[in-house]
Length: 185
Image (cartoon, rainbow, N blue to C red; front, side):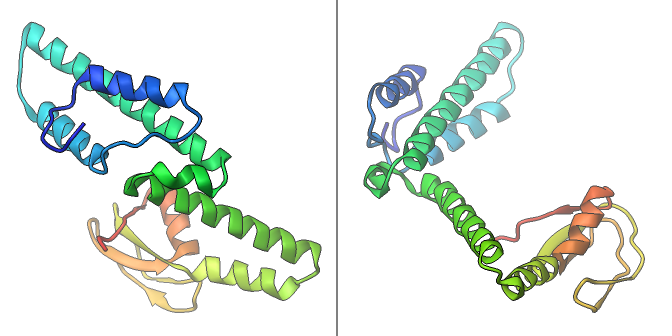
């Protein structure tokens, strides 16, 4: 599928079958997810009625399912393999795999520190996680509070955005007073 092609269920089906039948990650267009995103975004915004709307809904559903399956197959191959099989990944998939690698590294750090009696490392990890800055959007009024980093924050009104310590952000998210946001990079 090239950047100029309109996504086609037959193409997505062939890509899915090819991924299923091969142990290695198959080469796909580097713009694969971008093309699908543009196609699905445009399709979802088009207004239809009756039979045409049902066809559109079916096309969106099947395209979405095949896309999810393709990504799942490709990422499973990458996670289960050594670096050799990761060669065919495209940028969006590499983004996902990097977080998996980071999780493994963090797991090893905590386990190693625990097993080797490195209490100070564990304390540092815990403290850094509590005060790690997280951006949130407030859903309700929140009075001023003392942050996990001993700084004062607030008060906040609905729709205010702030960067606060992770421990406080998690408490507010659990209470449905705020939601985590991802500032554009």
